[in-house]
Length: 603
Image (cartoon, rainbow, N blue to C red; front, side, top):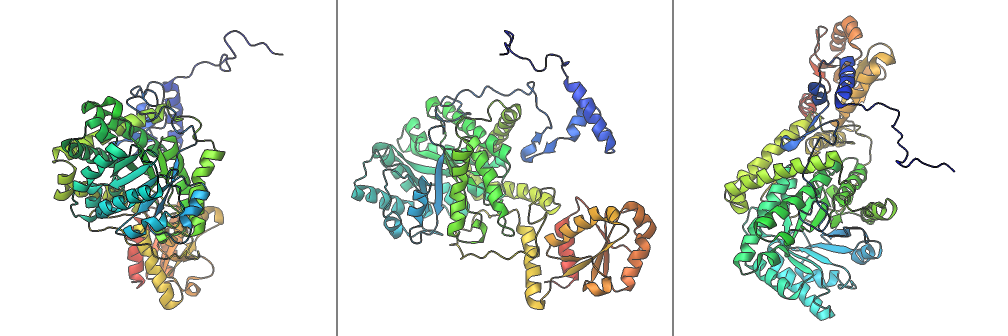
């Protein structure tokens, strides 16, 4: 048996301590090999990544990257969780969303892992009159119900509360949320919503249903309009503060008013940003409660939903991976409830297989990956703590901007909030168009021969207010043009890849060009001759050395053979005679592909 020394076993005892400066010098050497000259902090900055909201992710974090003390779960500022035990008892609440309820879908979900029900009622959802039928057979004292009823919230809430009474459910056992969210409805529709039912329902819940919350602060409308993480946080704070003013003005003490709110946020495939956003949201709401004089009431109840914006319509199977990462981020970030949207959400009504995969995503992360065994497992990470702090400051600044502009309702009605979100989306759209933010299966590694996944149309949700954007929308429009051309002519538009030299010289750029053109629905052809390809345009693919030798002559030969437009895969150079355009990493792929389809007559 080996006896350890009193001070334990130090595996690094014989190694000299490295310094930050030594690491920076190693980075300088790596950059120098790639042709970049930078020293010290500049070398580190060269490896940093710009995020939205003016934030930057650095390549390395150390103990010197300080952040405020996050505290403990269940205590202000609640960064590490609103409850002392977190989700350790049984994992987070698995909340399934329903816009229609065919057959026994609800009971099947509950029998196979779902723990609460999110019913979309009214516009774009279930009729109010169907609530009793949808909940037939559901043990309402065991399964929390969350309503999302827009302007029909009063009727939907009355129907649910009457059902509790008829089923003999003890008022103390009823759990969930009635989902009143007049500002969220206005954000969706552009139509103001009466707030009287909101205050009435809050009083009813506060006085008779301790497990029910009356209001939902839904930040999804701002996320789905293209907002950044900080804008989502700021808009949710401004909405929550507006509701506190309404409720306290109607006579509820601030502590009881805070207890009537549940917050809903998007969880994206950027796992660290999702983790930091949920942690920052709790810290910010704790600050609001502190300013209102209710420090102990600042524990934010969070419902995370995998982002609809990130869901792609092409190659939708990849959405399973996206939602898995998003769910991981939501769980690690401490969400109380998580809704995993099915992988076919963007295509219409999900089928039974998609719903099963959605609910099993959380089940695997909880039961097999044991993600909920440790409270706030990302806590203490220098990166996560610093990102949480920076995001909290950015979210607070946007909240203050909304308040300076008259509060959430005024900022919505004036159009100023919508313009801020649109500006953010425009900047992100430029990155998407240039594939700086890649979309796997859409802008990167598309599969033109894939069989389309078809679903029944989903009900149209409320509209007329803030837009609903998707990351894939620009490329989806290009692919739709190609599909229409295929249906009309029996073939997709084509481009001939003219590869010069051996495979070692042209493979990298030929693969790049092939992926880029397929992202626009244009089929690349590289076998045979240009005349046999059926293409009207061509793209040269090779190394710079071979371009210098052969590009001009090859481009001229292609045009003589009938090519109307000749691309070169790579940046402009001295070999560009008879070359009409270039495709390269960072080019505006959407603009290039759209113009190409125009020239090909693909309407």
